[in-house]
Image 1 (tube, rainbow, N blue to C red):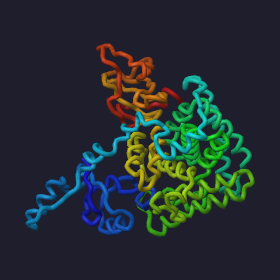
Image 2 (image 1 turned 30 degrees about the horizontal axis):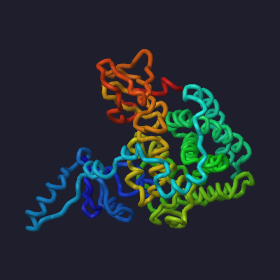
Image 3 (image 1 turned 60 degrees about the vertical axis):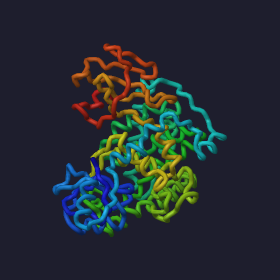
Image 4 (image 1 turned 45 degrees about the vertical axis):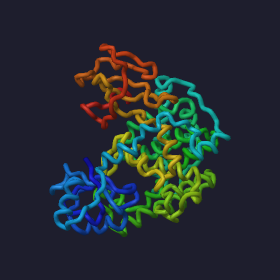
Length: 438
């Protein structure tokens, strides 16, 4: 159980599990840390109004809301109001599973986009597209690696080579987005910036395909996704690879990567003004708390809103020097909780619709006790994807994985209809999905 605390009520020894805003918008980049000194509480107060504390990881006793209220009543003689545990609060109001049957156009932005929407039916099953996508991903990694190296050496980029790679990536996502999503999910665990860049690009392309943007717009989105963090190349290594909290000056230096990336893009004649606009806005937030300009709501373009959502999601599920990857289900849940405040509510819901509540590459446990990996979405019923069963009910590896399409209500040996029981963290029960794909 996670318990909500106002920052002013925090004490040394409490483990901060979650903030009231995206971690990426603060110097506290660890995604969970033990409060070891009063100065950390003061620094938190500059960015957050409240946080969630994990009693099980705290080094001091942390009372539940009812216990804390009872203590205050004894001390003050007054009835003290308190907040609900984080788990209870989210269970009532913040479940991404609620979005499974939401029609794509059942939002203001959805209705607007529906007028221009392009339908992209899948042209190939994921098994057929996966070998092609693997080759495309490999070539794109080489191109992006060379692009990043050239930026570091002479501050310029080869836009033509990137545009050629982006055409291949875009075409693959149009045929079947799940193949490249699966590959990027597995490979983004690495620390290499160019793998993360491709992950952002592919997720943006899948997002744009989902809402029906024209192919030219998809190309713009994908290019911007690769270039979002190119400005990081101008930051000192000690900031990029720091494993602890950034200092105030270090955090301000981190923010300059937006301006640096814009400088690189504007020097190249190979990118449209829209690419630059997306780079400029990917850290802006709906409530105006972002940077560099503090834009809000309608001041942020639709493509900029999309980029901010995808950038946050890709960071949460990636391996970074200061944090372990978060399971995709949890990352989507956090985005859902932040919708309407930091990220555009309708666009967050569209993104969750795009990936599904159980994203491709994620592990799930079935009601039979078997463990499966989500292989491909069902675009109509998001809670019933195609899965590949990799562990039996005793959590032992199957000699030959079994494919199940849950939309067909397959029946298990005990006459149960297969369904997903819960999402699992990466590596649960010793699974290594790269054994099956890479």
